Image (cartoon, rainbow, N blue to C red; front, side, top):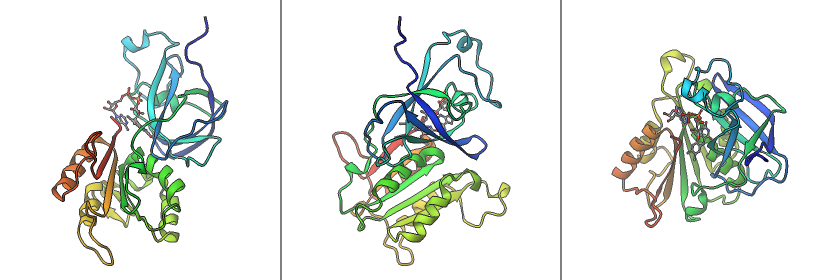
Length: 273
Ligand SMILES: Cc1cc2nc3c(=O)[nH]c(=O)nc-3n(C[C@H](O)[C@H](O)[C@H](O)COP(=O)(O)OP(=O)(O)OC[C@H]3O[C@@H](n4cnc5c(N)ncnc54)[C@H](O)[C@@H]3O)c2cc1C
């Protein structure tokens, strides 16, 4: 009997950002599905695939399951939707996790399952064309914003993109060089990286704190900068649920409101767990 789900794509690039952080380029066997920047798809590997070095051993209960079972998880697409041959996924290792230790073990040429389509409402389609966007993320929550700026930065030069990216250490700030370059050359993009563990990263000269620290700064008037307001800005929050909760509370105190299916708002949320 044929398997319900089979591998239908292969790894065509693997970039190590830092320990436990990689960017995987995945090329499907057939045509790539269309997607909007900000959407996610599903990746899968069979339970029988080996786990990477440094991951934690699985429980006896998980080890006894069918080795043909496909483990599947959602991943935001980081590449531009104009790129029609592959997708890039920015991936963090969860050492105790079921799928990521297996994804981290993949080498160029190895095969995996990728879902047949992309889904999700975390896109710029829900923002009025005259509004600016603030894109705030922790860790790999940056991925949907990379797709947005790579695809949509030049579409509407009047729209300002402000990216706040938080990580523990500077070496965990993936896509930093690209964002520094975009910030330098495009007057409508601002990039604000921030780290929380400066004591272990003494050479870091930039902002120290959390993503919420950057949002607090942008909610106030700054040199040559209007304060961020719900009338002029929509805010996107992606990644760690703790950051999302605290950032949403802060924004709500300044008049922003969560976007809900039947009740549109100015805070758009994608929680990773
Ligand atoms: C819409 C959406 C988009 C996502 N996009 C990405 C992406 O682009 N890149 C990415 O790395 N992950 C992304 N995730 C998370 C991803 O789906 C998996 O949950 C994650 O890779 C862990 O899978 P796992 O099987 O290894 O761990 P599991 O066995 O599923 O264990 C997950 C548990 O580990 C903990 N955990 C610690 N750190 C993380 C973390 N960074 N992410 C998730 N759980 C964590 C949580 O407690 C969680 O309950 C996304 C999730 C959603 C819902």
